[in-house]
Length: 262
Image (cartoon, rainbow, N blue to C red; front, side, top):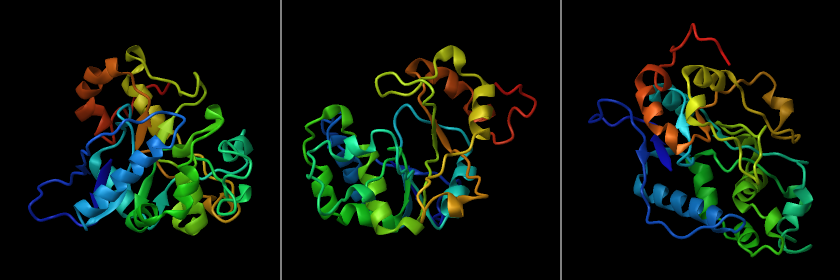
């Protein structure tokens, strides 16, 4: 997890995010452990520095696709969190009922249940909402009977924030993921031979999907054009190549103006 302060300390010659290292605990897919790990990261980040203003969660397979100054200004200038909040998605009922047909009741009705990307950027007030929550987390922290429908990391956070402060959220993720390829629940991975400047340009030119729920959906997001700031999933084999293009492409917002977009 990386955090962003709203003001830059005088001792810093350049803005840089604080990326926390927290002692790890075992986690498994199709269990509450991934969501629990994110909650632990938020709690530590809140205590680590009272100036932490935005809290960004992404995975080791994510890469930044803009300069830090661009990312910093985009996030710190926002009065809202960025978290994908989707309704009426395929298999939404199965995910809600994965712990049992009435396990989520009465606190989380099916109409309250939301799905979204597990990668988000939260404002401090929403980080506090997550860290202080016990009631809703108790429901999502239960063992699932149907593991194939159990993805708490993709439903707990959007459900909680949609219930608590829907108008305080932009219902979209700023981490680009290509789901046109889905291999057992895993998105497309960009392999070494695919990682070229044109790919980064194409990812930058793509815009997020916004939630379509009445209060926090398409009715007020019309006209928004938020940029993706991060992208995944990149193969570990591409790390050296990505590092080589960091200065000229990844952190150069005007790079590759003449590239042929893929």
